[in-house]
Image 1: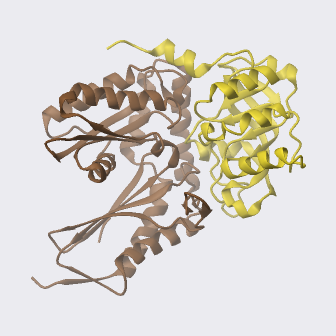
Image 2 (image 1 turned 30 degrees about the horizontal axis):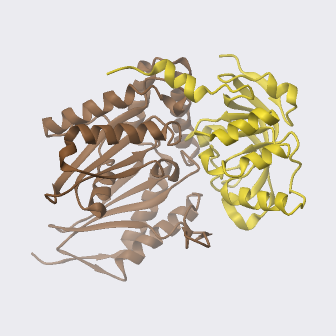
Image 3 (image 1 turned 30 degrees about the vertical axis):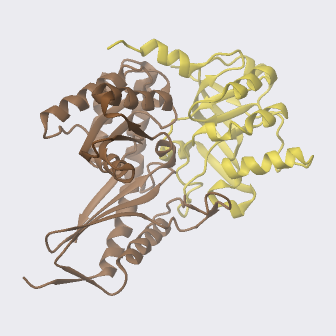
Length: 283
Length: 185
């Protein structure tokens, strides 16, 4: 099969459009989960907060404004088909340019500081994007943009557990992470859990887990049961919407697993606020 | 839940009347300031210099908005995590700051300063920036425009919705609310 040529200008245009729409349009699965949790929530204040979040999502759609002022670090997952020949410039530069244009044209906040350990200067165009690129079979390029806010990211954790700690140790680490975060990450949260790999890979797994649809069930029934157990324990903490007390602390928990070293049991918890903004396009 | 209507600047009497769990609607002027602005405000106080706004009775909003679209007063404008301002807040409270609007947990040092100097901490709904922007009717950057979203702005608000989390009497809605709904599984 001949190689397909794809101009990177199409990548720029796609990333620009994804950056804007991801920030304006809350995904339907998240919206539905907010509506359902408003029904189920036991706290009157919690119900009111969930109602505000639903109204907020409606305003963002109607007025074409960002759901949240923190329009995030742009995290791009790219799956590049190995039969695609990218032409017209650097692929990575094209992605950064798409973020630059999307954040300017969409009136999105620029929230990236360079030299964070000392100068902390705003880069003023929200670049660089964080990129996770993989080469896959095929002739297409699949791009997913996640707008990751700082408040929830700050509450995430990396846990290098001992294999002897087993599932009980993992449950404790996840529940403890959410418990300590309290009201900070804008609950109700969505929790991505990575298990296995190395310290770099386990955090990517946790982030990838967040791309699943809220309310979806893991295809492996054993992992689905683990996710249910974590969700029940997190919602028993009482933190509730915005941490003001209630029964909806998390909307969902997602686990991604891969093999680990025989000596290791890495586990990462990526905390996501209720404004779970992500969008995918295939070129 | 009937909201208490309050107007800035806040007096000690108004602050004392607020209790953890009270819903409020704030009208008047509040000042937008987050991380970088707080660092500079504290440096000015320590150097004995004048601040860009009158701190006595003031309410600060921990917020950095998205850019305003043409014709809009402000972009999305919800609260940021207050804990990052904990290192700076006690000094501002000692110098007259009466109210803080943000989201998330405060340290004991901040709560102690609120108790000692009669100040209050409100939570606005995090992630509801499009909704909250509707209560902001005026917006003027008054200091450090080079900080972009982190500049200090004078915001005029009308019936801005918030809830009292920490009152000056030691009440803490985050602790009380969580205890009320915690379950054993």
